[in-house]
Length: 230
Image (cartoon, one colour):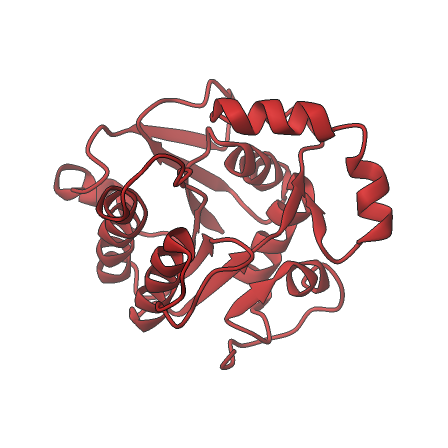
């Protein structure tokens, strides 16, 4: 299997990249981003691409892939809605529209977030924009598309967020995460579990197209097949 990863330098993307490199069924992993990951591996190819709204120059290098794991995202803190929409909806759709045209048999997995607003009409700005992005992705002609909505995320293999206040928050809550995970096993996922679940969904499908934390965890159990309506 050949996979693309967008956002492999972020916390979730680092975990997904690790699991893809470890998986024996994946023979090629290609990252796309504004900076290199710094990881060295025989399976890994990297494309450093500055304009994430236009992939015209690298289209030839984006063909022939079975799956895309889209882990790229930004915090909405301090942003206006148009700014956040450009960096969330705009960048995601620029990549997804290109990939759906170039790879008819691709499975696309998008990391969204718990609380995303599928109605696109709620009071929370970030949730509306994420909902708009999810809805647009589900309309594209991929073989299958899945929206991952993790709640709490526990980094377990040294993954670090690129957002300063996220790093501070994770540092402060690190001692509590194992306890919270035991108390709320369906809401706290590890970066390893998210990565493994993405791979499982790309290989075998999932019973829903929009997966909350408990659904993501369930992907690691008995294999299922085929996307159905969420």
